[in-house]
Length: 132
Image (cartoon, rainbow, N blue to C red; front, side, top):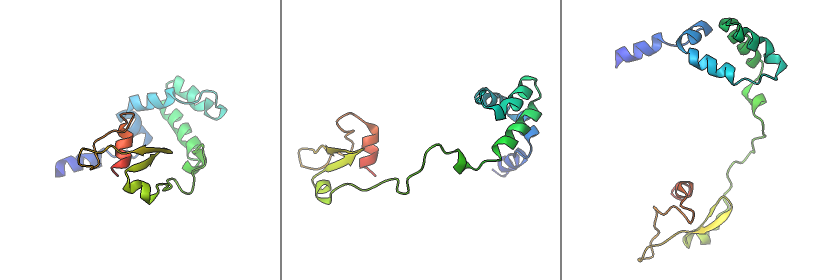
């Protein structure tokens, strides 16, 4: 175990050169998925196409380091992500809200909930939601 951890420490990416050498396919994938219509990325893409990978990566890094992640999120994140809209009486009767729809949980012959039931649409997400 110690030897494995030592190898991981040695392989830590400390420079762009190391990243380029260890993960050339990743670099290729990044550049193949860039927005080529973005004029701010034009020089980096041109350098990449000229096989000047290190220069291209430095330009790309400089471009993205100007922004915080918050600047890049395309939508406003609501303050409250999940609201509780279940009526306690409904829950006691086995009626649950799932994405705005009221669903009555299936019961067995003894009147107990069938917890492995996947809902009316055989939906794993419904089962995960109800069993949380």
